[in-house]
Image (cartoon, rainbow over all chains, first blue to last red):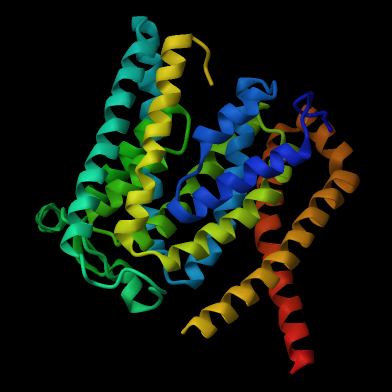
Length: 308
Length: 80
């Protein structure tokens, strides 16, 4: 099928399947999935600028679908999402500026690649350790079945004591997040977590959900189900902003985004509803390969010189 | 409990099937009715194109889900 805006020939079935896979991942883990969509669009000959912009447009649609489903399940903290969106946008802008600075210094690729590999592997390693410890401590307790209602808000983590210590930091102003079950937490802490996520988003081009979702769980103490839903809500705002700026620069083929979204919308519903059948630590343990995929993409890019 | 889960999954599968049909139909509708206009818009009025692009993806999600819910309520109301 020919798409005149980006001047590319791509099979709509291929786009639909890619969208479907990303939709499932997005709905289940609360990530945008650009680490798959970008390379998948590049693989069929789409220009890099169109791949980034079009991917963002499809992420908006998929996230709206997933958030509506997660909201119906009580998994979205709107207040937290709105605060985080501010931090993410600011972080993304600073990240983009840092890239420009590193470009001028002439070593952008190496610095960004090494930092991202260390961060991705660090997240995965830490999550393996934490989820293993948490699941071991919960051995014997039922981990199966629906976890709807108030129980879905309950989440156990071996990192819990550290998270609670972080929550007790009194850096004014403090905000209450009743939906997430947090009585008071520093606004600056929330903005910092969002800012760091945005910074990586600006560095690497994706939504950086694989950094933000674990940060929400371990630093802010948000239950995993709510972290997934709220991260998706936050992605709607930041990806819409990204879509707008890319569309103005002529980097969005909306027809390709809509085809991807046919698969993604269905996948996102399946992914979102599936979270109800898993407890928090099991969602986190399944999340572990995602940052490793991100690291693998960076290592490939570094070694081959081809940007995926 | 198993029976309840089975019932929930069945309802979800039906909803998903209706939604899938609508999503595919929506794309072909946009392609046929707006394809040429979007191409021109992208070349001439980028700001309008950017807004229309966001409205189309958000509309796809919000509008179609509302229609799906409406259709399912309509059919389940009739079958009762």
